[in-house]
Each structure stands twice: as C-alpha cells, then as structure tokens.
Length: 417
RNA sequence: GCGGGCGUGGUGAAGUGGUUAACACACUGGAUUGUGGCUCCAGCACGCAUGGGUUCGAUCCCCAUCGCUCGCCCCA
Image 1 (spheres, rainbow, N blue to C red):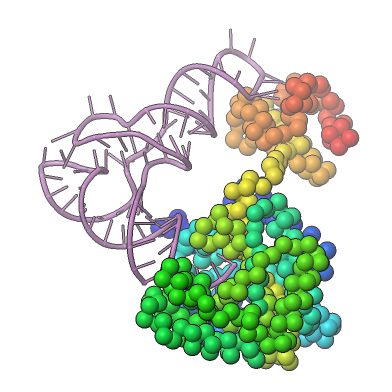
Image 2: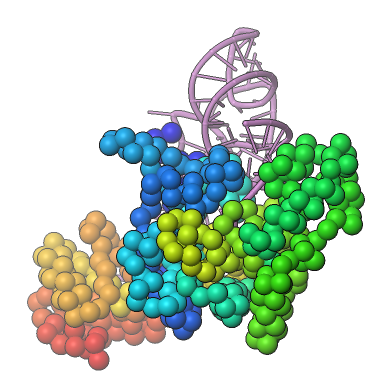
C-alpha cells in the first residue's frame, strides 16, 4: 500500500509529538543535572562498526541489521543501537583529550529488522547515556541511578531493577567453561534453543522459559561465584553505592546481556505488565569496546532506554499530563471586505507574539465561532461591516461570554496587556 | 525465521449468503435577520484489507497475498 508506513514503523502525529516532547524534556533536564551532554551521530554508519562493536555472532548483527550497499559500493548499516557510534565519534573527535571522563547522552531512532510486536518496532527510539574514560564503580552506580531517576521522573511505578556482573576477559571464559561442563551431560534434556545456546551463549540457558531446561539448570554454577577478584570487588562497590543512594535492586546472577561488549556490571529495568517485551532499560559496563573499535583501552559504562516501551508503560499508568493548547485569539470575519481586514489583524497579532487563528473557507459566523471554540481561543475578535465602519473590533471573551468593542488600533495592546 | 488471533466509514463498533450495511462519537450544514460551548434535525461507507475461487448471488464460505496484533527467538 502506497499510503501505509513500512512495517514496524509509526508516524508520530501532532498529538503524539506532545508526549514525546514531554519525555524528551525530562531527559534533557535530568542529563543536564547529571552532567551528560547531548551528542547526535549519523543514522547510518559503516557496517563494520557494528560488526566489530556489537559482535559478529549476536542476533542483532546476524539477522537484524538494515544493511545495504550505497552507490559508492560501501556497506552501510542503519544504526541498530548507538553505543558503537558514540564511541566512534568519541575516538574520531578525540573527545578523550578534553576530559578524563566524557559523559554523553543521545535520543534518537534505531533500526532493527525484527518481527514487530508489543513494545518492539523496526524503527524505535532510544535514550541512552555513555560515560567514557573512568573505571570507578561509582560511574556504574551513577549511570544506574540516572536510569532509575529518569523513569521515576516520569512517575513510573512498579519497576524492578536487576543487576549482575558478567565478568571480564579474565574470568568470564572460565565461568563459561564451567557452565558448559555442567550442562554437558544434560544436553539431551535441553530444548532445541538451549542446545544451540550451549555453544553460542551458554549463560542464556539459565533463563530459558522451558520448565525442563529450568529444572535441569538447578545447581548450575553462578557467575557471581566465579568472578575474579577485580570483578568481584567492583561489583561489591557498585552495590554499596546503590545502597548508599537508597536505590533498591535485586541481584540476578542469571541476567545476561545480548551484546558482546559488556563487561562487569550489567543491569536491566523491567516493567512486567508490558508483557513479553518488558525490559524498558538495559545497560552496563563495556571496558573492551573502545579498544575493539581502535582506540586506547578505555573503561566505559552506559545504558539505553526504549522510549516506546517507557511510553507504553506511562500510558498504562496514565501518566501523561493533559496538555491543552489554546490560541490567544480567533479572528472572526464577516463578509469579503472584513476578510482582508481580518487577515491583516491576524498578522498583526502574530507579529506581536500572540497565537492567533482564523477561518479561510468563508464559512458562516456561527461556524467560525465554533472553530474559535474548538481552537480553545481565549478571545474571538469579530470584524464585520459594523466594526469596519466604526473602526473597532468586537472582543468576545470566550470563557465569560462577555463582549465589548475596542478601537481597532488599541486591540493588539489590549490583548497583550 | 516460526506459531496463534484478527482485518466493516475518520474513530469505536453491530450485522446478514440475496432490495436502502445498525448505532455511537467525530466531521459538515441547519434550527428567520452577525455569535461558540447544551439540545434538536439533516448529511456523511460507488462499500465491508487486496487478488482470486465456490455460488444464480458474497461483506459474510474457501485459497492466496498484504497488513495489524500477540507469543517464540532476541532485544530497548
């Protein structure tokens, strides 16, 4: 259909835009207070950036990217997430040279070729944050706190914060092997999905919804018992910072992140009533990514929030304030002559900074009054033959229904005052 | 990529194998001479996602396609 937006995409109509601006306003305000500055990167990047940054074997890279050759024969990909691009920009513009710690945030469209369902779209919007250059667990905690405060600022309730540590290159492979050893004999009992997870990402077996797999995983080693000293200590500190800040969380040793670049801290915030796609925010530390992309080894933490999901949750909890927009004035014109004069008045009102409307279709006065009402106009400014002859405008207060005649040259000031 | 549900006007939504496809909201017009919000009246689907098929005849039956939706995978 020519008149249909592509699958998985949505138009945001004027009424909807109000809501987006509301949410974006909260983001900007909060990021400003936390010291994160906005960055805007291209909607597309070289395909290799995502292949390297996200990981060749991840689902995102393997089957979800919008990739095409441009007319120059280069492989281009619509960004499926923004961390890799933010890091690319960080390196390209040498932001590390300006400050030891670079704190960035972004809001924008991401693209993933997935089957759409509730809370999942092919073009969706994320608000994300990246803190580059600092290894301190305090930054992990700050990031998590920022995510929590953001959701709170929208009035969202009943969210759950889960945290975990997924280790680092020193301890994760060891744990991974332990886990594979554990499942080796149980392989036949696992579901098809889990059998393929065994090779690709054995940690995923732990949160399989299949009951059989679940019972087979009882007694499996947990990553938090296998962390190296550095990771364990880091994790403890993150937890104590969060506790100090009064942020409630639950430790979920089975929490896994889908993207290869995560190290140490991983976290996720859920709103269960959303259903299958209940994760509204996810993030963590990715100390290896900057180097992977070609920079010097640089510690980093970040998260992304799925804005559609957040707004879905807000709708469920009825959290959008009523934002009524109204005009200051609606100019009502009677007759052809008055129409010209009315247009002139309309322009004057607008030039004076007022919000003004009028009818262009030459409808009846009654109809124009209805339009004034619908436009939520504070005043109707009526211009007809009588007014024209007397050099006045009839000023009608739409709320009180009182009206008076005001000299034409006084009218703008009258409204301004 | 796989599985389930659905697809009637701008919106919500009735409905039947056979003349004019309910109703509500929205929208437009009107209820004597230049005035809104309440009320009343009227108008508003060349047509029931699209393309085939079955039938004397289909919006209602069958098939396909597309779309929406929910779930799996995965993710925000």
